[in-house]
Length: 148
Image (tube, one colour):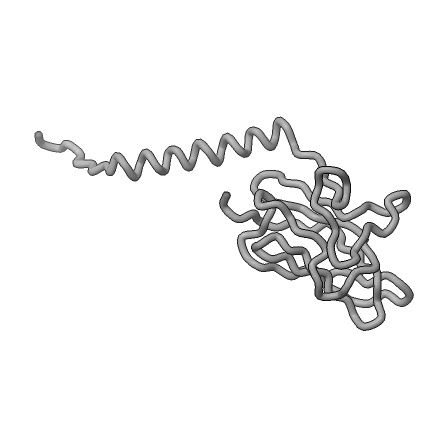
C-alpha cells in the first residue's frame, strides 16, 4: 500500500504504560477529592514516639504530624526531650521518601540554633540537635514518596 504509515506497537509495553498512567491519575483524583487528614504522632492508632521524644505542647504548638497528598508526604512539628541522633518516630510504609533526605530545623530551647531532621527510606525520622539543645521545630517539610 503506497503512502501507508508503518507503526510498530508493542502491545505489552503499551498496556503496562496505560495501566501505570491510569493508576497514577486515579491516585491524583482520589487525593483531590478526599485529602488525607494530618496524622498526629503519638495519638491512638498512629506511629509511636521512640527514644524519649514527645510532642512539645499540643495545647500551644502543633505536634509532630504527617499526611500524604499527590504522591508527596509532608511532616511538621515541635518535639522535645529525646536523644539527638536517635529515631523519634517511624513513618508507615505508605509515607516514606524515595531517598534518604535531610532538612534544616531549629533547636528552640534557649538561643535558637540550627538543627536538622533526617528522614530515611525505612521511615525513620531522626532529629539532630546541637549540644545542649532538647527541643526541635521543623516547619512543614514536603518530600516525594517512594513508589508503593
